[in-house]
Image (cartoon, rainbow, N blue to C red; front, side, top):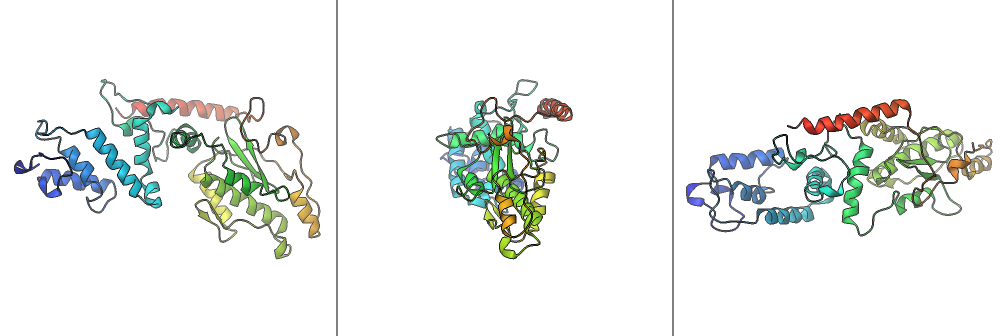
Length: 339
């Protein structure tokens, strides 16, 4: 800070109180965070900078941890929905710092010299990189779901009530099933002839909505595309964060799940129509029946509220086991790579 502007009162400190180097640091941090001005970070950044006065302690002692926590809380409350998602990585790091014992992923707080590392380097579970050793499903199950548990009074279910009602609205109108496996979750829409994707154990609405559109539209195109318009399956035009205004959108949903999130596929089950929903509709509009391929040891465990020992387990292939072992080694090496 400038010689005539040493801190004697609690923060915030004005931008003009800092010398050229201090202002440059504030500008650089604002730029890295994506802000066009310093107004969004000035209080937090400036109070941190005030502790660096040519190697000497500031003339007034502050509780910096309490100050920063309060400012982060205030900023999160003021963020709109878009802002929360835009800066979600900073929120993740706050949870990692204050609740590190709550997470299952490997964490390394100290470097090889025993010095404390930045929380950004404690784990790569939420790193937004193309070749992260953690899959998207691992991020959800090992980090995001546990954050949700910390924020709520009771642990959220593996699949939400809204998702359940979307699949099974009533006794007379059911369009699909949810199967809770030991290590993942699978959604199957009646009549769909695509491979379903393996979801995390705890399913975010974003994934559910993409799979809902992908499978339901495929079922409709497979069975009713050439029939009268009133025979076609109806789908929600708005589900979760997505709006589907044309049926070709199922291909975009598939690309997101396959290429962006890199989800693994479950096994193909065709024909899948355990309640005869698709078959009855086909017969109603003078089409041939659609006979379900029965797999009773799986079907009887569909739509459970929780996974139980001795129910659904989908074994990994040898290739998948080898890939998992390689990824586990990469996770350890990834922590050491930040030295």
